[in-house]
Image 1 (cartoon, rainbow, N blue to C red):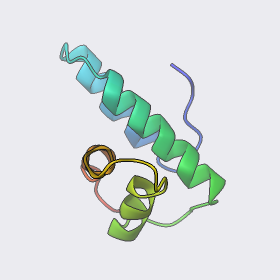
Image 2 (cartoon, rainbow, N blue to C red; image 1 turned 90 degrees about the vertical axis):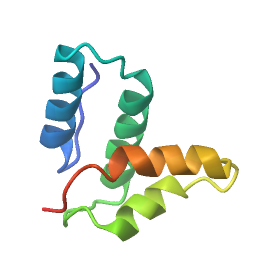
Image 3 (tube, one colour; image 1 turned 45 degrees about the vertical axis):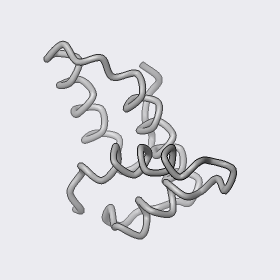
Length: 82
């Protein structure tokens, strides 16, 4: 797996590893979480995961459909703020 680099890298990787170990197919969550990781890195985000950050990520491309944005948000919102 391509390495994650943001401050969220460890919990994101652990989450994906757990899902794989449980036998879950996780192509879509992996794609969205890698995108979120890159988004956080590009913004040099160092604070906790907030609703504002998750929503900004989900809505970052105005060309995406509402359903696609909702799926992006759903994947990220599972992680607690730190």
